Length: 430
Image (cartoon, rainbow, N blue to C red; front, side, top):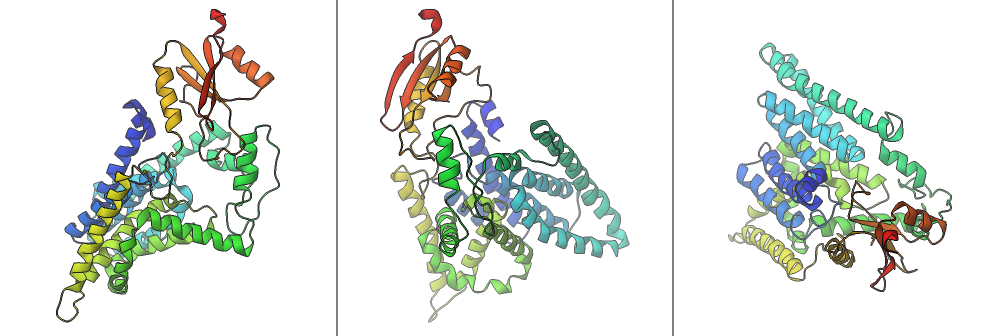
């Protein structure tokens, strides 16, 4: 999706398209599990909560693509149970392919309940001669072909990047660099030395000291997860939904989606880091739970008055007010994620792109610079970029950089003070 956005002029365009597709996919998915108007409400809630003032749309970190994959899987399965079709077989295969190319760890937990339900569905279909061939030809065969092609392409990608078909680049990167515990039963690895101060700070300080398998850090991990997820997906008025949520035990039709959500939550509890986008595959089900709670809440009548209906309207109005307040304050996310501190970099990039010639920006951080405000990143084709960003590494490493780019103006930027100055003119102008 980011590549599509890049072709359209900006990678964020890909984020915007994926967020819009996510909200639409939620509606399509839930139409297979609940009445259409309530499925539409779930899509509206997701659009308001995640697609306006949230890091899911205001950063490159969100989980919209994984959410699309999960929606395709559950939407296809809900429809093919009633009537097998080629379209649903293709949607099922594409959904699983998207899941394992976006959030493979969480997708394992998401797909286990679906796989079990699919097994029992196929077992029932095999007892019916009239639908057995349709199930195999229209669902199993196309989904299997898509997954086989996907597995081959993923293996080739892994092989070209890491040299091993079964070793994904993310796992290889974690093996090389990560010193932190990834799962709650692990302890941090021994520190390794980095010549670069920022790498030393990120891997050996920020990540490695975040969790040490002691009881205080264990409790802190789950507290962080609750705080981040409640800020990302909920709003204060959601507490009014508790009476309606108590009636979910009656919702036998939503049992499979709820099981996928619980399975993904279980996998989420096993990891250390609290990113709400880790729940991406099952986020559509989370909004289904909110909508179903609203449905149950509306049925509550006290002293012959429709108290539940009034509360449901107040909950929706509170979401609109909550998002509107964030927008009015120009906040991209309620928890401060989504590129804070990088507006100065964007302004400098715009200024240098308007100047003649090519440029390299050396970035020199102060000792208290936040590891979350990284200035050094570049386009895929670095040498063809008009502006290149690099770390200031005084000595031979800087000299190598200057010799490699003799035709570029070298700038020195210090983000913590806001100073920008010419460090060296192009050699052909000296």
